[in-house]
Amino acid sequence: DRLAAMKSGLLGVEPARPRRALLSDTWLRVLVVGLGCAWLCTSLWLAWSLRRDPAGAASLRRSHEMTELSNEVLILRRQLASMVSDADEAAASGAGGTEPPPPPTDALGHADPAADTASRHPEFRLAMIVPWLGAELPRWFDLFVASCAGSAYLVDWLIFHEDAPIDVAAAPANVRYISLGPHGMGAHFGVQLARLTGEPNQTHTLVRLLQHAFATWPYAIVEYKPTYGDVFRDYLDGYTHWSYTDLDLVAGDLTAFVSRAELVELDILTFTFGDAVTHGRLYLRGQFAMHRLSAATSRLWLACEFLSASGGSGAGAGGGGGSGGLLHELRIKHARATRAQQRGEAFRPHFNSAEGCYSRVVATSPTLRVKYANRMIADFTSAPQVYVLLSGGGRRAAVRMCAGSEGDGTAGGLVGSPMRPTASSSAPASQRAACDPFAPPPPPPRASLLGNQRPVGALIPLVTHTNCSEWVEPRYRVCADVSGAWASELGADGAANGWNFFYLAGRWYRQRFTASHPAGLIEGALFHFQVWKRAYKRQGPQLAPIPPPGESAAFVLTKEGYRPLALRPAGGSSTGAGTGAYEYDEALASIDARLKAIERDGVSPDDRFAYAGARGAH
Image (cartoon, rainbow, N blue to C red):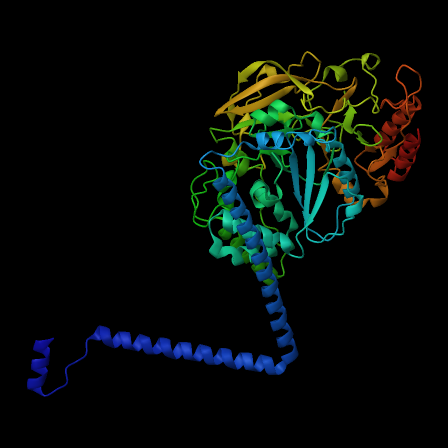
């Protein structure tokens, strides 16, 4: 540079500026001018808009400010509740010195001796969590709620909503309604998930995106089922276990289907409806997946990429690393929905279910103890009629169907193959046990909680593969190898599908069981009507009214709707009135035969329900 300057001085000319500096100055000028023009155009457009419609602009501005203020209030409330909860936990842990707190079962079992009463189990308590989004409740909601009362000895149902039109006074004592207020579900999930994923600086963004998702696609709430135990942790004081669940079901007496050993020894217990044996499907069912409230089951869901922190290592349990996370997943859905709306197109995003990634996470965690128990009835595999007995007047609740007709429901058996025959279905009709829907239910619950199944034989090692559950991504599938002859063998009690499956400390097992059912019947802890509810949504008149809490009743559920069945005590001194036994009128046999003929000949639903009404009268 000095030599160039000297040369220029000798020649009497100005030194040339370096080319790079000249180019930099030019681009800087272009950038400044461009920004200035953009600012000027934006200002002129805003001024023109405000002059054209000042009232509309002011209203829009006020609406935006109120929405932001409402969100801020919801966020602050939930952050304050979270801080108080954290402070209480810290105080409790500090008060105990270096000694760890007792297990939840010990704390609840011995804290208050007076809690050991006939109406409530003294040691264990299960919270069934149901968040509901929507201004209208499903048509069968009253039947669902009435059925919850049958499990009051052990179970509470926690129903979270956003000011839904719920008759709180008509609820059984073990059903709790918790209103989070308008748009409160998205605010609650946003605040809690931001805290749990370690991203408190993203709280406002998560709240906004979740509120949009829940308002646009209420079904999106199912993606977050695995998080319920942590998201609603502040509401679980006093509980030892929790489970996510749904509303498209009716419950029997869950107390009769959960044993004390399972509550003490297992981390997770899920109920299947026979497809674990027929199709080898090992996943956590969305209707019942009971988790022990402990550190072992807390935050397992963070291993799923779509629920993890942004840019985290949630890999989806063996499916390759991810760089997205919860926030990225929500932003993608929001962007695609906005683009579809601009084009005038319908858009329904893909939703991840607990049957995929989370089930795989649980099935690959080497320290967990998990059981897949065949204790649920579903319309995929049920009989054409399912009977529901509601508790009340000293009578026990029950969900049951006639043995020997499994797989005759709406779906015609499981997709892909029919249910395997049972001894009762293959035997001549004259040798089958009579089907009495009003047979006495199980005895009243006791603190020992024996359950309705008994193991037969030892645990047998189980081979697994990934060729099942076609709706689940291949990397998340966990399947039992049921190709062996053992899967088709009938048990000593003549029942098919009499196997439960276990995942214990990293190893898979199967074990035969026998179940205690009244003769001629199959009972379930729950009845899940995933297919039948399509008709229930359309045909309100076919859904019978439900009696007030405390009054016993019985209903028959079919794919068209549900109708009441009249109860009357059995006569004679051998059974005695008031023992819970009922007569089943012989005239029902001819009515049932006529109903089957109607089903076969395709008579109209009105004629079918005329006979169903006569059946109910009997």
